[in-house]
Amino acid sequence: MRSPREISFRLQQELRNIQLALLPPGCKGNEQSPLPQFPDPRKIAQSLAGTRFATELLCTAGQITAHEFPLLGYVLETGPGIDWRRDYLNNIVTEPRYFRLVPYLDTAKAGDHKNIWELNRHQHLVLLAQAFLFNGNRQYLDEIFAQIESWWEQNPFQKGINWTSALEVAFRTFSWIWIFHFVGDRMMPQFRARFLRSLCQHGHHLANNLSFYFSPNTHLLGEAVVLHALGVLFPSFPRAKQWEKLGGNTVRNQMTRQVRADGSYFEQSTYYHVYALDMFLFHALLSQPSAEYRASLVRMADFLQALLGPERRLPFLGDDDGGRWFHPYGPRDEFGRATLATCSVYLGQDWTYETEDLYPQAAWFLGRTTGSAKRTQVSRLFPDAGLAALLTERSQILFDAGPFGPGRAGHSHADTLSLVVSHGDEQILIDSATYTYVGDPAQRDAFRGTAAHNTIRIDRRDQATSVGPFWWGNPPAAKVLSWESTAQEDTVTGQVENDGFVHRRTVRFVKPNLLLVLDVITGPSGAHELEQFWHLGFPEAKNRIFFSQPAEEQKAWHSFVFGERHEGQCLVVKRTAALPVGFATAIVLDGSGKVNVSETTNGAVVEVIAGDSRQRYELPYSSETP
Image: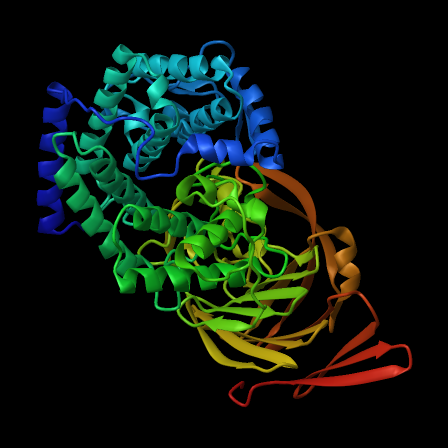
């Protein structure tokens, strides 16, 4: 049900869109490149010349000039001419009609819009501009200008699938800002005039289509950040002052709305946390943020530091879409490193980063190309996210006992009480990640369903009801019941409740190498089918996990980048019984020693045998358990 306020807003929005489409604004700009608000890109390129970053960037530039585009989990080959409205993977193209009439969510008519939009973000053209700064090869400039001209011809203002998402317009605008900053002084006068006119038109579209009601999450945030940037960086545009004010006010409001007190991002997605932090950071560079805004950035960086852990890899809890705010190339689980490095430089605090982490982002944003920092790993509970990070200098256990995201929880997964576990560079238990959004509905449901995560499924039902690719119905109630952390042990208990069933999980980390897990399920009478899933990061990890009941091996599918999946392994413990039922599990992180796990009437007992040493641990049921 839409409120009268929303209906009025949308009606006015559509009237203005029709007016823009009938009478496209012909605004002009007279800014000069490079933009003075950023470091001189030529000096940055000179500082980074010869680094591994520069070498890899030039290699990627070679692919792009051959029209082999590394996107998400695949390489897209378009041939000599680029059809900007074509889903090349499904061979479907849409017409350049008024953008509101394009059925972009209908895969039969439009294909998978994400395959189209990723190329139309034009982030690959930013990379070509950087490549030109590195070696002065004119081929890169010619390719940039030729692709933009072909894009203009195929995508008239507000016509076609590439205008249907305001966030995608924002991404393209952001790319064009950087292209102008890097090589705007190399544009011929006629091209430059058209470029600035089109950039201004993108601003008009954004100002009128901010996602206040459609997707008030990273969509609204990214759109507002770019609108504000246009107002600040291109003051000669006629609406620059209005854009700066509207965009700035919106970003500040979203910082309060979207970022919780513990620094976590409200969509319950680690990948989108990085997205949002990068967006908020960029906005801060072009504004004069308040102390409260900066404090929120600090808390977001603290949360990201805990997510990355000692090996500085991002676990994919909740949705990941494979993209990035700036420079979307390289291993996706390492994207958070550049973000944390940017936080360290901008905020003046020592979150862990190495010099190479500066090159993808902080160098171009802030001019910093040297430096490093290290922060001690400390276990923490983030109560608003419901996330416990159990950490040592070599190990990381993340325990997710948090709620689904707000509203329809579109980017949340049915993963409550799930664990991811790593020791050194070995990922013992992993999250299956995302793989797809709308390209394959069955796989979308499978990857975000409960069985794709290291938790328990009851009667073969997910913890919530899938209602389309970005909507959960009947989400469960979840909470952290207790948390205790010392130098020797961390213990946390979480609970999820839905449809009369209660699953309580206690996780005890005996530092440095032993993880103990006790699950207790209570609920309605009668026999119920219970499945406990453990998704392995590598096959031999199964030798480090010990159960109180037999486990069977199953094939599973895991995704390490959006659009790509790989066959993996999963251990499943199954029981059909009347409730309450308990499961006890022990994981030896370094693989040393022998473990016996046995159940008792009051819980479970774990005995660890290492040489002549024997240690006994008791996992008692909570006094509240029936």
